Length: 281
Image 1 (cartoon, one colour):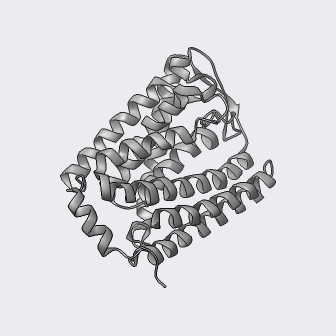
Image 2 (tube, helix red, strand yellow):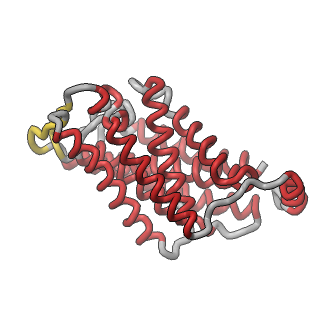
Image 3 (cartoon, helix red, strand yellow):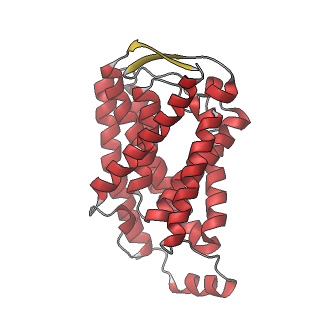
């Protein structure tokens, strides 16, 4: 039941934030403000529901070290997406035609921040963390990564390959980043940096949702295998390869730090279930 309560609480904030952003879409400054407000509300709500259902402090979103972890994750996400675009451009698939829209980038800043925070709280903070306790790191990573890919299947131009690519890239890499650091701030920063670089800087398609008006005015053309086609660079073979390499690096770091969780035996699961109080009165 704690999974249900935690997911429902964060999903409610994500839903309200999403609807509010849709209401002001096209107006950069309100989008920026609503996006930041969604972030400001989502984290305390997550912390509150974790404390209520698990009777523990939510250390995975602790304030101490949050700033540096966010910065590291964001820089890594921007650098990773930039590497993808540079390789696509080297083959003539990406061209910069001039400067884009600074105000457009501001609106995307808030939108991408809200998406990164709420999705990481839901998929890594709630789903992966709780499933990992019972089934171990590897099974939980595969299951929640698949769910994350399926969640993007309804996106325009996604298709099966788009969902598979997101499952491998984001579902694997972002989960591995959490396992390696045991803080949600790094995957939140990584998620935000990747998405903002895609839409807010390089003005490309983001998960098939249409080209964004970011800092650069750009065009993409060429084989879908290289450019990702209508789904955007996330459907490119370069994105898959770079994110798989990052996933391997994070998992190697997690193993060195002893952060990989083995699958629990049934007796251990029963003891854990008996010892845990689901909801305080």
